[in-house]
Length: 275
Image (cartoon, rainbow, N blue to C red; front, side, top):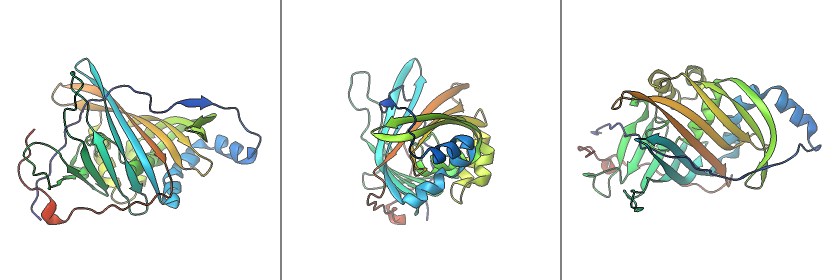
């Protein structure tokens, strides 16, 4: 299959509050489980990806925030994900222009082990064609490039958790969750990750400015991620500086029906992509 791999351009995104968090006191109910999670937050976080596989599927909402050139903008995504098949779909909306109009049509992204497929990627690509990106060939492993972090990859990043603190219980979108804060070692996450995630994370471990990624994670009573926020730091080759990006993923609607089909080879664009 002839095709051109294309390194997606990171798009700036700005600060936003994705959800309203209500504070809640610790409940006496389930205190034994509470104590266990509080006693070993690292082990609890290491099990988060497996808990998503057990759940099967979910809906997902993403945002990516970054300041560039004195401007803060936000990339938002909505879609769903199948954790057993390791594939998902997001509709990613790029930032508006200063005049308040959409700069681009929404990009449809299909997420798969080792690959990112994008429709409406850019000028010069036929409307009915997809652009395929080999995520292991990206210096950030597609943690940032696509404007959203793959939900399952975000979970498997937690396999590299070195240190973490349990900060107590709160409520998120009406669901009681446990809040953890810690740091991921990218190289350790790459070694522990599943096939298809391992190679992109190994690329990120080499390509990011820092090998450690701070995070905040909110898990429900089944150990499933409800919200996770990573703070990445990468080198901007064009501006020769380090850029900080915050990527937030919200997961909900577990068990939803997900029907994602990857493009056939003849539907993948192999020509030049205009920047």
